[in-house]
Amino acid sequence: MRKTLAIAALAGSTAVTGLALSPAAAQAATAAASTTSTGTSWGKFFSSDHKAYTFGKTWKSGGVVHTKWYGVDKVGGKKGWVWFEFYKNGSWHKFNRSFDGKVVGSWSGRGIKKVYTFTCWAGKFDNCGRKYRIY
Image (cartoon, rainbow, N blue to C red; front, side, top):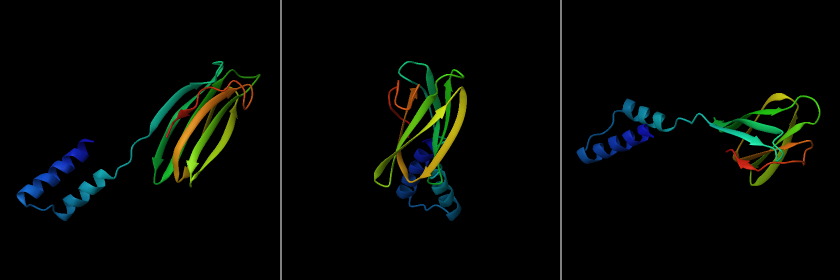
């Protein structure tokens, strides 16, 4: 944000004074403006009965959206499920992953515009928690 404001101030001052940026300074200004963010951490998102939860991080790098997720529930017995819904190429897509105990997973995709997630426990469609937008 500060770099963007500094670039805008510099551009405004050169317009007023009639000075032009050197090629090296102009390249540095455009490189600073095109850096990507480090991503968004999300969670803990619980199932409706609070017996399982997921959390993670989602970020975009080189046109690809990456998500690393962690699922937590009690080992043995029934599984937890994490669902992901994403908007890509004009349509919605949905998939899920199960976990038992502490599990780490990741996935990525190109051209993704929106990503939502929610957590269920004891079945793919049972005890599902609220849906959250993570990207």
